[in-house]
Length: 483
Image 1 (cartoon, rainbow, N blue to C red):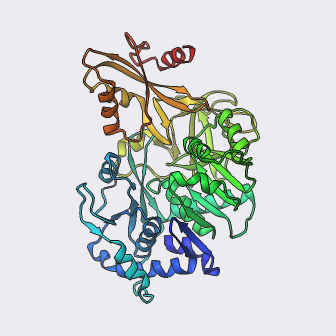
Image 2: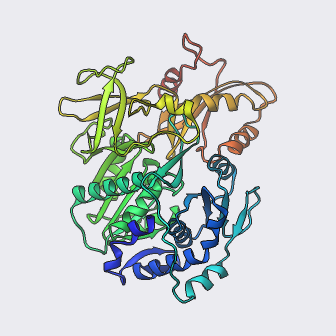
Image 3: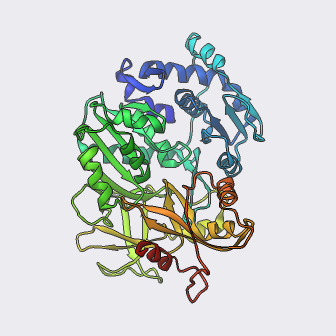
């Protein structure tokens, strides 16, 4: 199913480039042939009746080749992170694949690993083209892909994406792209910066292939070079990734009119917006949504307010409600809720978490918001302690509890302070005893949260708290700003 959706447009232009990566490129015609060959070589996996197969290849072409081949066999796939660390282990536990296909053995217990080395791919892709003799399909409500989300509280959760949901989501992304920028030539490059473990990262790649665009698969450190070229390019990225890209840009470079940048992850601070315009591109759109519902609103630079995230897309129902789920008047702050064909049905195997965030056909992302008279959504924070650092969600309450387990920490509270670009940066207030070591504490936090950016520490006599006992994070943030 995925391979038909991804390769249908390119079938009319088999010689056009489908994907480039460091050290290689492939045409749509060659990709289609290789998917066929790989599926034929993996056909016997169906005899094991796996519900989902994990995929771990750092080479992007082999990774997506296997994903598309498994889809051709009617087998759901789930991507695993490139880096083998504590996040990899957590991902493996949540996804629970029956089999894992990987490029080499890793130092992590894996159920039914099957190593497919470079020589295996070279042999398969060089062999005569094979054909699948059995008609293996996904029915509309069959699970075709399993993905990870951080949930609305920062907890890793599993989402089952049906064939119907994937098809609708791809059409949404392609339509949004065309309606925003208009039709482009087939030289357009799409640079994915979001990992394929998430629904959005996965759907961006499938949508780019489905539209006939050229995928340019790059490592984070290579993005600055790619964006400094003048070929028509579109990219979806988070504010923190864009900050890193800006730091890689050559000095004195003029903004690129051929670069179309979509900023995901909610609000875009005005300071960062102006830096993007001055150094990178004037073509900026901000999108708001969640992995559970896809993109919900789009803002194309028509507002100067950095808490505005635009109007709802045509297929999205968006409301602001009070605690009783009653719709509030315009300009009134309440809870954001979203419904529509892009919303998933819930979290896999977690009925309690599903019932909290999905109610009566609506998804509740946990954001405070307000709508203007003309339907522009403004964000006003959250109803919980969830914060986005570096494109990943973290629950500050959970981080507090983990920090307290470190030797020498008597009390602790995480909080945020805007950096020079207006993005939230992590800080921690610590009450410590005589045996506290800052280096040991840093190692302790990195052990379970390797993707958490380095937090700035401030030592206090006591943590200020609200009436309910929770840390007064606003007071801590204000104290740092005034210091």
